[in-house]
Each structure stands twice: as C-alpha cells, then as structure tokens.
Length: 180
Ligand SMILES: CC(C)(COP(=O)(O)OP(=O)(O)OC[C@H]1O[C@@H](n2cnc3c(N)ncnc32)[C@H](O)[C@@H]1OP(=O)(O)O)[C@@H](O)C(=O)NCCC(=O)NCCS
Image (cartoon, rainbow, N blue to C red):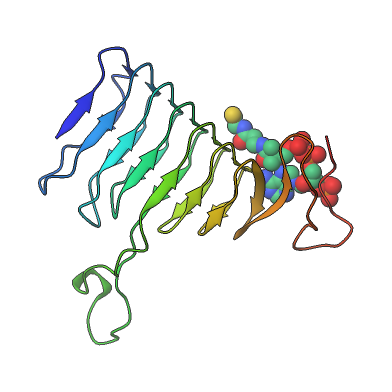
C-alpha cells in the first residue's frame, strides 16, 4: 500500500512501486521526492516510512528489504542507495538468486535531522542517530551516534557537529577533521 500525504511533492518522474507482499510505503507531509527516485519493495517484507519535510534527491534508490524508517527533516543527496537486504550466497551449488535472503539485521533507521551526502550506500543494520552526517561516497553499515560526522567505506565517526569532540581519522593519523 502506498500512502502519500497531500502536501508531499512527488515528481512525476519518480517511480514508487506498490508492494505485492503487503509492505507499506508512506511519505509524510511536505516531503519532496525528486525525479528518478525509485522506491522498490524487494528483498523482504519491511515497510518504508518517510517522515515530514524530508528531501530525497534525484536517482536515490530505496529497497524496502527489512524495513526503512526515515525521520523528519532528513536530506538525502543524489545517487544514494538504501539497501536493507542481503541475498543469501553461502551455498556454492545453487545460484545466488535461488538462495533467498539472509536474516534481517534490523533494516535501516535514519533519525530526524540527518544529512546523507551524494553517492552513499546504506546497508542492513545501519542506524543514523539524530543529527548525524554521512559524507559523500560513504558506505554505512552500523550504528552512528547522535550529531556524529561519518565518512569512508565503511563509514567511521571522525567528528561531531558543534563543539563536540574530535576522533582520529581512521585511515591516517594526520588527517583529523578540523574542529568548527
Ligand atoms: C563530510 C563533509 C560534510 C565534511 O565537510 P567539512 O566539514 O567541510 O570537512 P572538510 O572538507 O574540511 O574535510 C576534512 C577532511 O575530511 C576529508 N573528507 C571530507 N569529506 C570526505 C568524504 N566524504 N569522504 C572521505 N573523506 C572526506 C577531507 O579530504 C579532509 O581531509 P584532509 O584534512 O586530509 O584533507 C563533506 O566533505 C561532504 O562529504 N559533504 C557532502 C556533500 C554532498 O554530498 N552534497 C550533495 C548535495 S546536498
């Protein structure tokens, strides 16, 4: 079932597919869904719930998988893929496509006031707590603390918004994000 609030703006060029397995796709008030966004029920029976005043930019792909929850005032930049599902692949003598899906790691949860940069991938089990930032080109696969700034593949916390503490950049000791 697809439920779109009357005040949401969904581009005529976006493609929101209805589920044949009963997943709910819900789009909240004043949320904007840009052209070439694809929301696809696949890889599980989770719901996709998108809150109020969320901006989902061009070419973002959201698979329902084990569920996606997006809080209010979230911004998701172009070309990001949310994929809360994994094919089972362990048996060698069966095609991956015939092995169904792995057990859920909890879906993807994005709390309010999160900013996700362009070209990110969010895997099953990702939780971006309130106010977190995910830098462009990052791969998220775990829980990220409130107001944290996270970059890389896999994304690691390097800093916090505001006057928060600084954490060593994971790949190089001399590359610590500057305090603001
Ligand atoms: C994460 C981000 C917000 C940090 O911005 P910032 O606070 O201005 O940080 P800086 O540019 O000063 O970068 C600090 C360091 O982190 C590195 N860095 C920044 N963003 C990075 C990213 N996405 N991935 C890997 N490294 C990154 C920089 O190279 C720099 O390292 P250095 O000191 O060794 O040169 C920003 O870089 C980003 O990724 N923005 C997303 C932009 C976007 O996708 N916009 C789409 C339209 S909304």
